[in-house]
Amino acid sequence: MNETLKRGISGAVYIALLLTSIQFSTESFIILFGVFLIIATYEFCNLVQLNKIFPILFVSLFYTTISLISFYKIETENYINSIQNKNITLTIDINLVNTILLITTLIVSVKCIFFLFDDRVQSISTPSKYLYLLGYILLPFIFIVKISFGIKDYNPKIIIGLFILIWTNDTFAYLVGKSIGKHKLLERISPKKTIEGFIGGVVFAIFTGYLISKLYIKASPSFSEKSILIWTTIALIVGVFGTIGDLIESKFKRIAGIKDSGKIMPGHGGILDRLDSVIFVAPIVYLFYQILNYVS
Image (cartoon, rainbow, N blue to C red; front, top):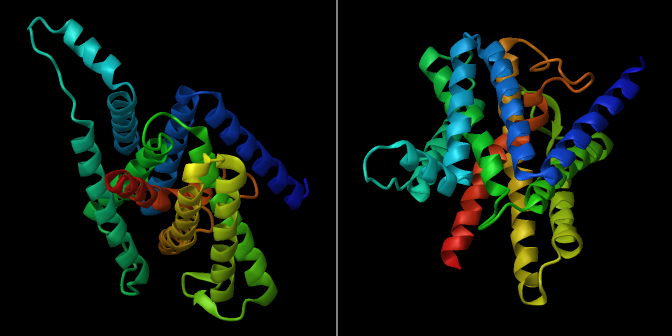
C-alpha cells in the first residue's frame, strides 16, 4: 500500500475514534484514554528499557482509582460507606489530591525541560525512568481527562478544542517550516524543526483559538471577550509547550536510537508519537484553568 495512503487511513481512523469517544460519553472518553495510557506506557518502557509488567499494572490501577475518585466521587463514597460496618462517613478531598498530583507533574515537567537542553545526558538512570513514567506519562493522561471537565461538568468541546489547537500548531509549523524555514530550532534533537515553523505554528494556533471561541464554543455575549482571551491563551500555551513536549519525546527516542515510539499507527508511529504534545500541555492547561477559577 502507498505510504501516503496508509498514513491517511490510519490518521483518519485515529481522529474518528478520538472524536467519537469524546462525543459519545464521559465513560467512553475515560476508557479510550485509559487504553491510550497503557499503550503509551508500553512504548515508553521500550524507549527507556524498563520491564513492562509492573509499570502497566501500576498505571492501570492508578488511573482507574483516580478516575473513580475524581469523576464518581459521590458514588465512590457511598459504595465504600455501604460496605463498612462502622458509622463513619468517608470524605475525599478532591482538591488536595489534584494539587498534589499537579505539583508532582509540574516538578517532573521542569526536570524534562532540563533533560531536553542538557547535552551531557545520554543515558537515563533507573530512578529517573520511574519518575518520568509517573510525571511525564501517567499523570498527564489524568490531566487530559480532568481538563475536559473545565470548571464544572464534562464538556467535550474543551478537549476537542484542545486537540484542534494541537493539530493546527503541528500542521502549520510543518508547512511554514517547509516553505520558509531557514533557522533550526534545536537541530541536534529534531533537525527538521525551524524557528520560522515554530512561530508560524504558534500564530496559526492563536488564530484558531480565536475561531474556536467565536464559532465553536459560542460563549454568551457577556463572556465572549473572556472566552476569546482564554482560548487564545490556551493556543499560546499549546504552541510553546506542545513544541517542547514534541522535542522531549524526540530526545527520548534519540537516546534510544529509534525513529518512532511504536508501530500501532502505520505511517504515524506509536501513541506517544501522536500524543507527545498534548501530554506535556495538559497539566499546564489544567493549571491555567485553576488560576482562572481562583481569580473568578
